[in-house]
Amino acid sequence: MQIFTCILLVFLIVCAISVSVSKNLLNSILIYMSYSLVMSVLWIVLESPDLAITEAAVGAGVTSILFFVTLKKIQAIMKSDEEEEE
Amino acid sequence: MSRKLSNNEYQKTRGFRFRQWFDGTKDPYLGEVEMKPVRDLSTATQITSEKKSDKKMFLELVYDMKHNTQVKLFRRLYNAFAVLFCLLLVAMLLAAVSNLPLIGVADKPVNNEVSQRYIENGLQETGSVNIVTGMILDYRAFDTLGESHVLFAATCTVLILLRVDKKGRKDKIAEQAMNDRLKEPKNDKVLQGVAKILVPPIIIFGVYVILFGHLGPGGGFSGGAIIGAGLILYLEAFGFAKTERFFKESTYKKTSLGALTCYCLCKSYSFYTGANHIHSIIPLGTPGMILSSGLILILNICVGIVVAGTMYTFYAMFRKGGY
Amino acid sequence: MMNLTNLLANYGEAAAMILFGIGFTNLLLQNNLIKKIIGLNIMDTAVYLFLALKGYIAGRQAPIVVDGVQSVEAYINPIPSGLVLTGIVVSVSVSALMLSLTIRLYRRYHTLNFDEITTMIKKEEK
Image (cartoon, rainbow over all chains, first blue to last red):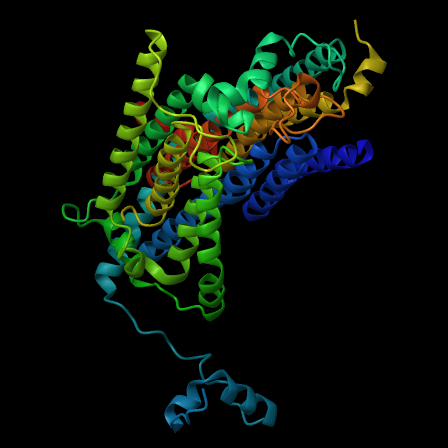
């Protein structure tokens, strides 16, 4: 059990570092989504099932969806600006 | 799919052009040397010269050479200090962690008599089998009230910032919102097929998590988030027109207002009877049944409804600026 | 001052502090606005991990009463769990608010770069 926890924690740290280093915004958001999912598994290892359900529904669900929708709106505004300039 | 195209249409497709290239009958000058249609010459040159002068002036002002070196120097100093500060902070925190008591050991200052009281008398005093739910909705209900306020404030702010008023403004943003609505539903077969199978179980699971909040893990927030996610999937697969059949703006307003008022009334009753040492008349029931634990079931349902509506509102505001 | 064996035994809390540092560095040093918001979220979850580790006791069960056993020896501490539940909801509210502010900023200045936005604001003030 301790080795499993250690592996999960190392995965979290690697995810956090690669979010800051990657150049593509979409990649960062996907890695953040997997970070949130592994966090949810970690809550179960620490014997708190309430937190696990809430984190899975909220972190890997709603927050990541809001990030994606923000990216979509920004690209839509960028495209409409380019169309206007032509 | 296998409708035969007319000769004109076929000559415009990529397949025909590939065939021509493959057979060697492609005309190398066609499409390469022709001139594009010319716009009105005088106005075009005037507009482009104006734009160029504007752009040059703007670039001169923003990327001033004098200011640019200052910004670079400031940036370098800032980066160096920030990295140093962060390393120092992490070192201090690790030093603090190394002096804390060990994880997993039972006799720490954290496990004092408060948790003992909650565990030993929780079932008798609140009636809920899940100790954490009984704690946040009965012993520590003030915190949950504050959290509902935070959710409400965030919803108000997102509504103020992103709402598009359809009646008044005819400018670009309202147009974009309308365009977004016209381009959908995209009728993606895979997404619609999956959504037809998945959305009912998701919503039923969310309702289950809310109703059994005091008997197992879960509660109002988790169940509300799950229902919200199910509604978002339905919206993405089937478009705004179909979702408006059962979830309009007035729906959100009425359910949210009703749920928050019910929460307020129930909690006021509990506070009043608790503060004046009056015995409350709400029965606690037998632990293990759904209709037990006094007011906790009603509070869970109210919180679940508010959270589900809030998650859907966030998404709809981001997508379209309206409902 | 530093007790190294204790630090290795508390590996969970040490990892939570390292994650906090990474999130904070992201918040200070990144130019892109969206990566700053992701950094803030990482900081939030690191603090929740630390709090939940405070309530964990090895060998005991989750705080749901099973078979009528109600002694203190059988369950972990439920209080940090309740605090973190409130925190997660606050974290999602803050994220939604900041993302809507980002969209409005982008509509106004057409860039996601923080340096450019501050330079434009300074130019507009003059």
